[in-house]
Image (cartoon, rainbow over all chains, first blue to last red; front, side):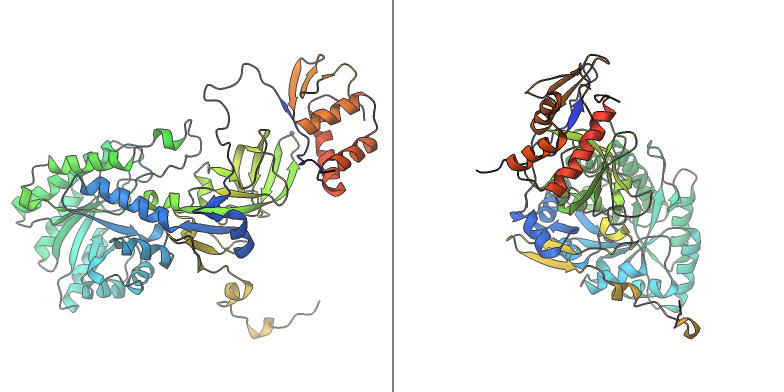
Length: 452
Length: 80
């Protein structure tokens, strides 16, 4: 006789009258495939956990963002934010689509060069640039975005030894009505520091002032704040033209657009509340078009969008290690991935889907990672179908920041796999092993032997 | 380990504890187990039935059984 499918016994207390008006869970389908490739086969081939990136989704998301801006404004250029995900294969997808590179360190700068990005299409941001890195950027004709006065004077000094005028912009911070105001990077608009920096650049005669840059925040939930930023940058651009006789060639509005991940503590899912890329495009381009530039003098609009372009394309596949019950009766499930590789679980309530069939019975549970550390909690409270040891899950929207901010802590970092547009899988970053981790360590001779 | 005598169970998985006023929903296998417990069937007999009827090995069932008892205890459905 054929045996019946087993599900472990559970009871769930019924709380009549206490349901919230948004209902309970909304995920009723298992996610068994990513771009036509089965989750089970990915885990079988590449192990668990494993990051999976959909090339199709990257291209589709990028093209949608380009469409949103280019249909509203004639001169638009995206620059891929390396820090969001600098695995070379990922960067190259963006570069193939036409994206420049936006880097914030010498390390990232060299990565961009290595990926074949021409020097004059690299934007060099960030508060730390060594003399050597600045010289390299000047010689490559890169766009150097100055962050503070010390860097401005550093550049002036370097210009004396380099027989080339660097193309520079300043990063401007400002009050756009959004709290918290990001004022740690760049020169402040309201207190006049930005204008002071611009006059010093032009007065030095050693640099070519080409652009104005801002990056007003991250995970911005208001498109209007960008319009405020455009107005303030435009004001500086007009002053540069009229008072410094210098035309600003581009406005770089930075990044900060949110993805559809739900922030921790948010009442509603992000997909219902966050502005779309079209909302941001509308706010930004309308503000530039209404700022008063002559048609032939409209500045190039540069965007350094990272998160919104890559988050959706990333998945983390993992496996249930164990179930247990906590002292207060709550279910706890331990996964084979934790905050070491899913750094964004500190910020987001990641959507997690089982990868196999399940019944309608669910449990509220805490989702822990495998680390022997108390901080290793992926979801504080999540309602999922009954999971057993060995069951597989898919974590959605993990493409941004996880593959750069991940930590080699207690566990190794896993494989990263790209699914191309034809559904073929490619290993784009190998999992670490002990040899890789220890290759930089040195052992003093007197510690080479131990006796226990 | 006995289910409280006054706890009401149904085949559809509805459980009511008149002492506390709490009600619970059970998944089908939990409902089956509860009905058998209420009828006084011994845990070992119930486990044997489950092993014969469902695709599960004894080690998994043992772990899930212990967890189920914790749930029942938590829900105040067992005689102390």
